[in-house]
Length: 391
Image (cartoon, rainbow, N blue to C red; front, side, top):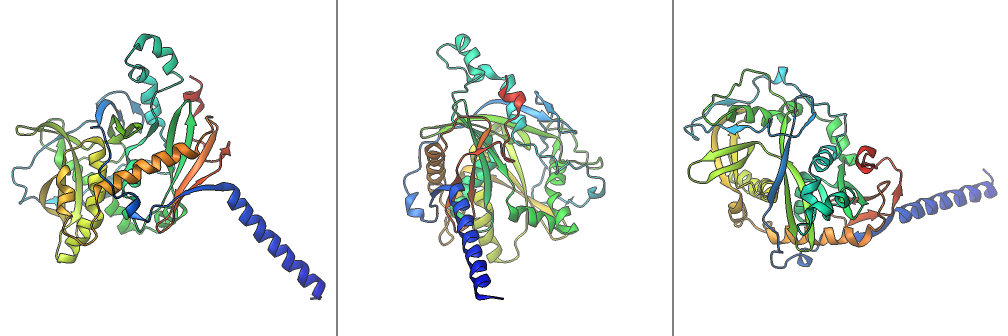
C-alpha cells in the first residue's frame, strides 16, 4: 500500500471516529452523577402517603377492563411453618402472555381517559373537565416498576435501565425500554431459568381465591396474563405523581383490617452469607416496590431448589429497612428517595420540548452517570398513541 493511500485511510478512520464522537455528543447533552451517596444523604424528603384513586383489570387476553374483576382474595394458610406448595406443578400447561407485544403505558392511558374528572382541579371540577382533556395537572405518569428501579439505582450494581420520556401538555410520561444487556440476558435464558421465572405466579395460585374462605384451585392452568392494578396519587417534594402497579391480592385481616398484600418467593437460607445477600439485594427491591403504593404486608414463601415451598413468613413493609440495618454499608431509604427526588428534578430541567412526537432517552448503567439525550423526533422510542393524544 502506498504511503499516500495509508495516510488517506488514517484520515478516513480519524474522521469517522470524530464523527461518531460528534454523533454521541449530539445525543448526550446532560448527565446526573449517582455514585456519590453523600449527594443524597439528607433527611428523608417529603413523600405524601400514596392514595388510591382507581384501579383496573387485565383479562386472560390482556384486554383492559375498567373494573376490579381480577382482584383476588388472600386465602391464609392455617400454619405458616407447615406448607407444601409445589411450584413446578402445572408449568407445562401454563398460559403465558405474548412477551413480543410491547404494552408501553397504554393501560394507564386507557384508565386516564375513563377518569379525566379525577384530574380536574378541586376548585372548579365542572369548568376544568374540558381543559383536563389536554392537561392533567400532574407532573409524572408511569408504572410503579419504573419508580422502583429509580429508587434502587444508588445501590444497584448489575442491571441498568433505559427510559423514554415525553413531555405532553405539561405532564412527563415515562416508559421503560429493555436495555441491550437485558435483551441479551433474555435470549440466553435456559429452560430451567424460564421455569423458575414462572414460580411466582404458581405461588400466587396456592394463596388466592374468590374469597378469604375459598379453597385455592391449584389444578387449573395458571397464567401471567390476568392482572389487577391499582392507580395511586402521591407527591415527592415538588413532584406530583400518578402511577400504577399490579396487586397480588387483598387480605381481610381482623387485626390490621383490609389491605393489599404482595407475594414473593425466595430460596431458603442454608448459610449466613445467603441471609446477608438477601437483606442487601432483595429487601431493598421488596421495600421500594410495596412502599411506593402503600402495600403494608409482604408474604414470602421460602422454597428449596426443587421448587417446594416449605414455610411462609409475613413481613411488614415499613420494617424492612430495620431488618437490613446490621449489614455493612447497608441501603438507606433516605438516600433512595433523595436520589429519586433529584432525578425527577433533573428530568424537569432538561426535558423542555412539550410535544407528543418528541422523546428524550434517559439511560443509566451501573458505575456510570445518568445520561439524557437531546430531543428525538418521531423516533422508534415514541410511545404515546394517537388515540390518546387526539382526544
